[in-house]
Image (cartoon, rainbow, N blue to C red):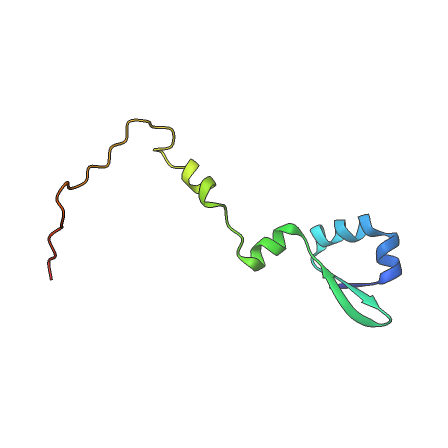
Length: 83
């Protein structure tokens, strides 16, 4: 992990972000103390387990867009309990 002083990180922000994307996390220090880490969106998503939304998942369904789906239900007041 590369280390950047705060002032250098501010001055060269574009390069810092590019290196986070291509070379991995970049550490920022303030007065010699590590205070932050910049990482790529891809790495952030991997670490946080970010997944697609439920809406996106449902839209990938082969049934998406079908208007004639029917879900029959029992009309009785109670269902049989097998226990």
